[in-house]
Amino acid sequence: MVDAAVATGDAAKVKTVIEIAKATNPADIAELDEIHGAFSRTQQEKARLAAKQKEERIRSAGLLRNWSGRGEVGASYSSGNSQNTGVTLGLDLKREGIDWSHRLRGNMDYQRSDGRTTRERYFVSYEPRFQINNGLFSYGLVQYESDRFQGVAGRLAASGGLGYKIVDKDSVSLSAKLGPAYRHTDYVTGATESSLAVLAGMDFDWAITDRLKLTQDTNMVAETGGAATVIIDSSNTTVTLVTGLEARMSRRFSTRLSFTLDYDSNPPENKNTTDTLSRVSLVYGF
Image (tube, rainbow, N blue to C red; front, side, top):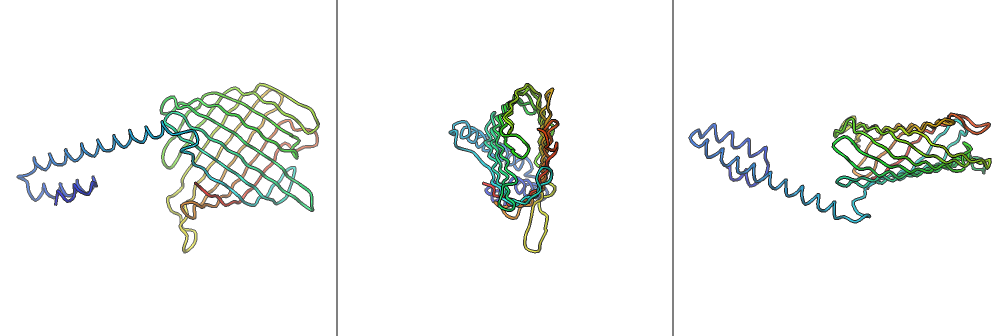
């Protein structure tokens, strides 16, 4: 019976069987302890070798390997400088290494009303991180955005600094970052502006429950996700807040409800300081 349990490689099963064997065969306790110890050492060595092999695969992987991500498509409703329905597209790619991680994000919001374009916003960012220790990391960030209806033909921002993983658990993660930034803005009026700034950012994710049954035949996982980025300089402060609720319908597909707030303390003339975007979309993970 003990040999059969050991053959399964299931640590919990081996522990249970050996405890029963000890209770029914007290004369063999020493031998059973030896069997259990040998099994534990073997499992630890297997785990060590597997971890080493995994690390070697990650370190030797090419630049285009080990990427994962998700694509998003859906309908949207906006308020502020424009109030229309439209289409939104998004892409979020991640590459997790041993010390380095990379994240590439992009989204597009495009709307037309009565045969004319009423919203046209593009955003793309790239952020590499180097993990200094379990909590502390350094980051770099380059992002570009364009929102003609907010008066911005193009805005490029670059930043680098330090961050910290405040909470890093399977169900909850929270990290913050801070560093200097440089920003260059081209306005639709033809004016340009360049300035030094300070960037502060936060990322938050919370898996509310493993399984949340919303319909009779669909098991769904609800997750919340939030991000905040603040860029402050002497003439203009911008704030971007993104909050979302996601429900997983299958291993690959999810539905997502999100709310985005963009604040510009010093917008061009006749433009609002705040834009909001409520979005319902279908997400495909890969």
